[in-house]
Image (cartoon, rainbow, N blue to C red; front, side, top):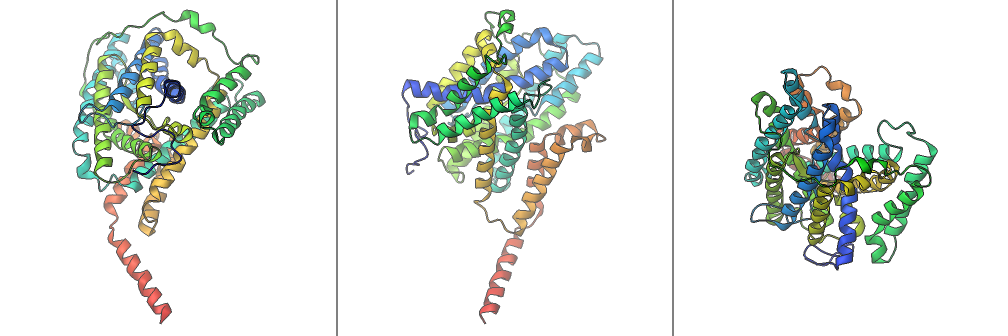
Length: 459
């Protein structure tokens, strides 16, 4: 493979310690909010307030373990890339609905957690099973379908990034000039540093931008560490701390999300491969996708055992590879170590959690938009003919439509609402369905027609 000038350190390069640590910390900053937020939402919605600090610690710790598994690649398990693992947003509705059902039956908080972690563990075997057959359905895991999924992921994340830049969900100062100025300042710093000809500044652009944002935020009273005194000194992982429970009625929606989550993972790993200068077609590519989905399943099994929710491959950190130029998988070992330490010592995670939303929004907005560019690049590797244009437009229309107008699903049965409520799932499912239904012969007919018209014109 020829050297890509945009990449400072390729897949199997070993950057010096300081460069590796700096790059790893930027991946953690890009993914931290995504890792802890699903746990915060599930815990707050179900009234599990006293359990939240421990659950967040476990989420961080298992994310670290999962990231190590993906990068290290144990036999067929793992993709061998900087594929940061984190708690998946896609399962929140199904898990909250299931836990609420347990509560309605008279179950305690421990019973709710035991049920959620039980279906997390058992459902993970679906992804493990699917990983063995992904190559058999590679005619639907095409650059077109994965590109659509990546583009939809990025567009949904852009909404989150812009919301954070303005102050975050539910903020009383949402959209205030101070929030916007702070977020835009971070954004401008990262852009300027990333455009620099000096490799070190490019490599550190996200870290420097966020650090500068924190320095600006502190005198404005937007950065506080008062909550740190309430956190425990250490969190110890205890297998099945809350027990184990299973219910088919609760399991089935979760199982379906696991099935669709595999498609999202394929899209994220495709973008990761593209940014890392690796092929996105061929046997090596399929092997990475299979190993990544296999690892997703294994990591979710570990998550269920150690009291956290389903894990998935994150797309947030893919743009860090593009912006820093560091694609070395050895950086993932540093990421894993940082996440495990953050989980083991909650006070460290609490410091990152205190980072003002506008600071994180300014950094993540450009990263999420970079992922959109990757989706477009991947789709453009296939001809944008009439058939493919129809697949792209319909899939994006359905996916973004459910994101912009979620009320459209309000009257559907709960199981169907759970499936379609994610814009990524609805867009990906539509893309796969149309890929199977619309005949490829249209491409040949269209090509023949164009050739015929050209001959006629020449005549």
